[in-house]
Image (tube, rainbow, N blue to C red):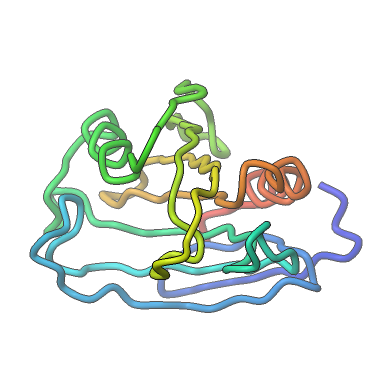
Length: 178
């Protein structure tokens, strides 16, 4: 990875570090309990959002890359295997007109994981009666490390997807467990 123009992010409580563009912003969130969640109803873990500077076509939201840490069954979660986790995560992220582009084995450092890319339509703006369908693309890589699932996600409009795919790839390449 070319580190020029990148900052290093370190989160000791999650045990991770990665590089991200210095013009992008970081926001950390702790999950809240959600009894409707198929993956994490207890609300364990959290997410780190990396927001890009580009607005989506309809001006709602930004290109976002986010990382999640979710416990597996042996540490209080609901799911034990990566295959089961990915199957449920595809279901959770299947909105209107969902199409799986690929699902493949992929490494993150020395760990074997599964990477999935799909497209779907969602209303934009999301909660407006005047909304129109917007084609989105969502790609993520899931690995299991020390009884936690770690995900690196990339979500933006289908048209904007190629603009920051290199950032997603660079974050994956720079990702380390601390």
